[in-house]
Length: 78
Figure 1: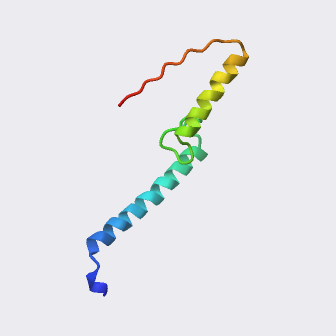
Figure 2: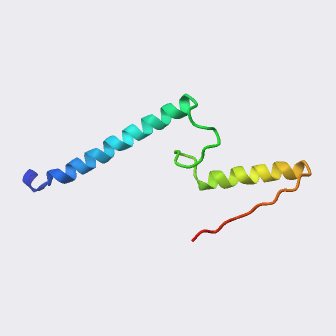
Figure 3: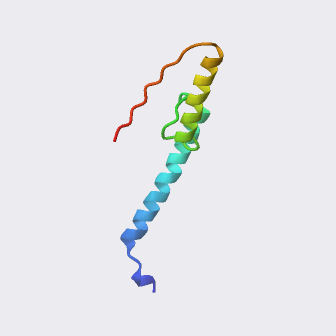
């Protein structure tokens, strides 16, 4: 029955959809126009924690090949 749907739920769903569309378009234009630093990893689609770990590993390995010594400090914040 159409009368059983709550209008407040439909507004909430529509609002989330509009927010997602605007967020995706804004992010696309910011990357396309170089407003974001290429090394920015947080909060960007398809750039996850795994990507950050791979990038860090690449930097360390490149420095080891140059015979540079690198020290890493890792924080575990609970």
